[in-house]
Amino acid sequence: MERTIQKKLSVGGDSWVTVDVYGEPDAPGLVVVPGVMSDAHAWRRVAGTIDAWPSVAVVNRRGRAASGPLTPSYSLRTEVEDLGAVLDEFAGTRALFGWSYGGLIALLAANDRPIPQVIAYEPVMRPFGRDALPDLKSAEEKADWDRCVEIINRRISGFSAAHVEELRADRDGWETLRRLSRPLYAELGALNAAPLPGELARLTAQVDLIIGQFNRGTAPYGTSFDTVRRHVAHARVHELPGQGHLAHIQAPAELGRLLNTRASSAST
Image (cartoon, rainbow, N blue to C red):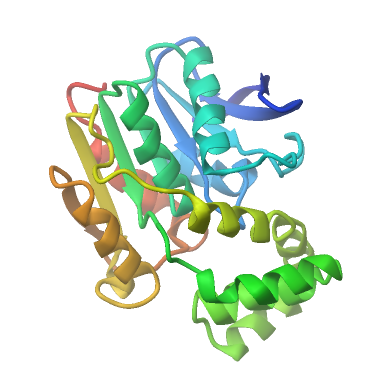
């Protein structure tokens, strides 16, 4: 499936979001919500693999080019309301898919409005990354984006120092990570500040939660996944073999095919 258009949508607080649309622009389909350290561009290869829905709309959340700024009043509720504006534009959306922070946003949106199906890959919820917030605040105040990238990879995600050095060796890739780290402190702060309901996705009949095989039962993503799962009692759980949190980068075709198999008859 190829990208056909990009839409720009006004949202609250004098900001806006852009949405990359693949397939048939006017056909109800799948809406994708990326998480932190990610943007719509990073999901292009996954979107290109999906064919179970006639269209795939990938949200470029605020704080990322070419979307607008976070704004001072930014919160987790801001993200849910932004997604609501996207769903208003793409009337009849059949399924929501969210990754990481985007997974939590999708599950919360399904408390506000009925959505036929929600799929979330390793959604996170508080207290995810809370211990790193003081260091992220300090790095942001100094505009030390290298340090922000190091913190998210080492302190929060638990990757090795060697892994970070491999990332740094790719100059273009490292610069992309530096750019994506700019809203990181605000996003993790919002994630940890928001009160959460006891039940998630309560207006959705079918919820599919996906976890990478390497993260099953391990901190931080596997343990956060287990916490989210307790808030979605009716969810079905699936495992992506041979993958961790970054399946959209390391195995986009495999992730796309898994999403194709998860498409319910009610949402296609």
